[in-house]
View 1 (cartoon, rainbow, N blue to C red):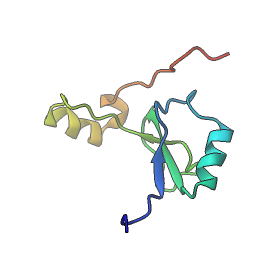
View 2: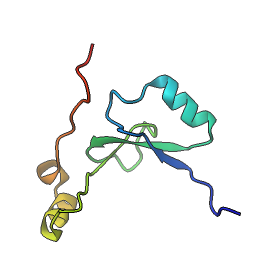
View 3: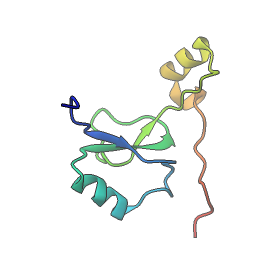
Length: 88
């Protein structure tokens, strides 16, 4: 009745310190097949870790030329990821 089932989720504030093995286990038990972090970057065609997929941050103010450059050369034109808090 609601349409297709969601198979991929995104961690809220999904930096590397925002989720851990327990959170991943909960996502798996809820039936998700993959999850996106907010860590900037790209993934291999067949990523080994489907539970911390990287993504490219797209901002509403981003110009089309910057967006195109980021897709062409993400290692040059993307934003670095930051930790929410200092690691222990």
